[in-house]
Amino acid sequence: MKVFILAGEPSGDKLGGAFMAGLKSLRPDVSFAGIGGPEMMAEGLKSRFDMAELSVMGLAEILPKYRALMARINETVAAVLKMQPDVLITIDSPDFSLRVARKVKAKSEIRTVHYVAPTVWAWRPGRAEKMARYVDQVLALLPFEPPYMEAAGMRCDFVGHPVVADPVATEAEAQAFRAHHELDDAPLLLVLPGSRQSEVARLGPVFQQVVARLQLERPELRVVIPAAAPVVGAVRRLTQNWAPPPIILNPLATDVVDPKAEKRDAFAAADVALAASGTVSLELAASQTPMVIAYDMSWISRQIIGRMVKVDTVTLVNLVSETRAVPEFIGANCRPGPISEAVLRVLDAPKAQRDAMTATMQRLGQGGEAPGLRAAKAVLDGMVELAR
Image 1: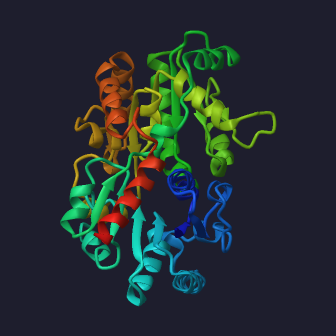
Image 2 (image 1 turned 180 degrees about the vertical axis):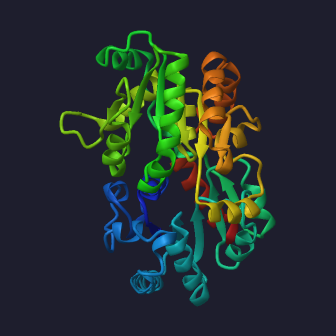
Image 3 (image 1 turned 90 degrees about the vertical axis):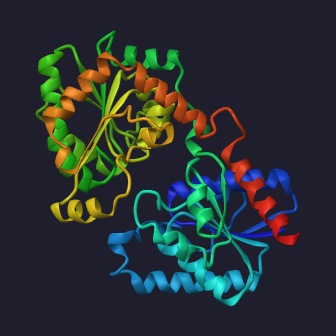
């Protein structure tokens, strides 16, 4: 069995590595070619070029790098057509991967599978119909996504979210984290202002005011900030005058043995989190850490996105659990007063949210087969279905 597989960013590389491991367990005769990062290369992929070339080609960067992107797209399409694999697997990174799938389909009958459904349930529903012209099957991370893809004419399988396969800190590890940082039984607030410079710049001052209000209400409150590597400097500048100073977890620190484990321990030790909107809500849910979500953007973005969004919540815990247990403050609602009040409410009464988080993790596949194995089985079943 021959598989051409490609991913363009670390999250896709993680999905690809798990998928490859699952497929190898089912089809030992499988061989892979394509583009990926360390997780996929650890499973035997020899990447055609450095995946990092694609990781920097986000929406804001496509125009200045258009020629380089198109060159890599055409190179990849030529490689797929030369290989004639049994299936082409494209993982997320739609600016690259869907262009490859479209060009491959235009020149061949190679089966195309896209891993990670576009968020057509939230905005731009027409994307599904366009994809259906050149994508045969979609592997979805969220349980409510298949009907949207199927309505457009594609087979879609819910295979589980990778968060359910990630390790979670134990109670003992959470207590050890508290002891190491001399937190005792103080209420602990986790602050997660985002992983991009622009997010920290926009959300940081709001989050700073929220923390100040909370510490007036709860003087014993302690703050931990697990800083993402690209924004460690920005977080330090933001918090240089905070009193008392927060505990900043620096993943680049040379004296930290396992930064990912330290972050997991902090999640488990926290009583409540204030986080930028994003998939971090699922990481918090996995740790059973109650949360308040906030996000803001430029005025122009507010107007455009506000007219396009089709849902009344952007928090995945709310969407998957079919509740509105997680308070969220988006756009013009991202204000310190209401946010701080919500944090206090959640801190004092977390049960409803913990119930929603438990339901979320169950619906995402916790306790079942690993998502990578489910994805591999779905791809093989799709190929058998085609041959009937």
